[in-house]
Structures are given as C-alpha cells and as structure tokens.
Length: 224
Image 1: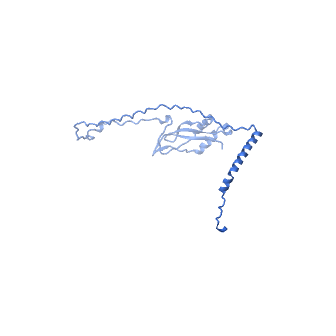
Image 2 (image 1 turned 90 degrees about the vertical axis):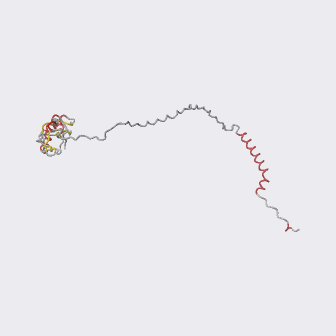
Image 3 (image 1 turned 45 degrees about the vertical axis):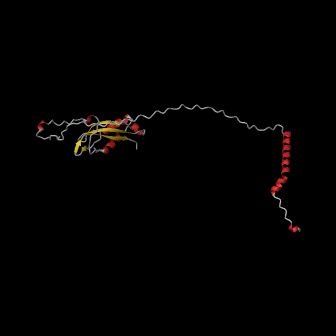
C-alpha cells in the first residue's frame, strides 16, 4: 500500500484543545486563588466580610370587622283595592236657568263700588302716565346751580349728586319737593333744595289726560 492510499488524520478542534488543557488550567487557577487569599490575609488581616443579614418585620394581625347581617328586603306593598262604584240615580237632564233682565231688573241691582280716592300728594308714590313731565327752564336751572354751589366746597373741589322728588300737579307746577338720595354733605343737600324751587315742568299725561305725578331728578354739583 502506498502513502497516497493512507487516510488523512482528523484535524484537531477547539473543543479538543480545551479538553486537553482543562486540567492544567483548572488546577493552576485554584493554586493562584489560594495564594492570592493568603497574601490578602497576610497584608490586610482586618478585612472582614460584609454583613448582609436583615431583620424580618413582625407581622401584625388585623382584626376583621364583624359580619353585618343584611336585613331582608321589605315586603311588597299591597296593591290598592279595586274601587267600587256606588249605584245612584242621577238625572242626566240638568240645565241652568237663563239669567234675564226680567228676572233681575236694573233697579234691584246693587250700586257699583265707589272708587277709593288716594291722596298721592302725601308721599312719593307711583302714578301711571304715558308722557313724562319735562324741564322747561334748563338754562335758568343751570344758573341757579352755579349760584347756589357752596363756595367752600366748590373751591375745595368737593361735589356730589342729590336726587330730589318733585310732586307736579296737573298744570305742571311743583307742589312739593323731598330729598330721595342725599349727597352726604348737608350744604349740598340744602343747595339742591334751593335749586329745586327754580324748576318748571310741563304737565304729565296719561294718554290724553293731565295727571299729577311724583318724579325724581338728580342735581349734580361738580367743579369744571
């Protein structure tokens, strides 16, 4: 048999090399680790292992609430009894006697109620009207406001508004005046009452009839 006919040897794998050198590597690492520990304990004898112990938390027993007894559902309400219709004889021919002037003559009728007359001039009150009274002498009122403005308050720059009630009769004449809202200064209130005597109005109308009314107007004093 020639050399060419011999089978080739199988190639060595990495696993084979690991198995062949495992024993020497294992014991070499064990010896190195032992020597390293002896060296550490020889030079650093105070080294100690870290304490990894832990304390267990004591479990606390919890008392469960007592069981609640659920009451039974309420009894079903009984249905109302069927109503019983009573038997009665009712005359279906029911009529109301007509009302005529022969049976009720005008002479026997009671008189109509008298209208209660109220004196509206006693105090401010609402009076219906369709056309409100208007001021006829605005220029004269403005001159009166400048004349009646208290000098001390005007020089100090103090002003205010006074709301005055006017009672105006059927001819547009002012019959009464009252302060509705004060300005907070007695001097301004007195000046407003003096100015209110100058006002002249047209009469108020309720449709086409002249009527007496209470109206309110504001009198404002201010420094311009």
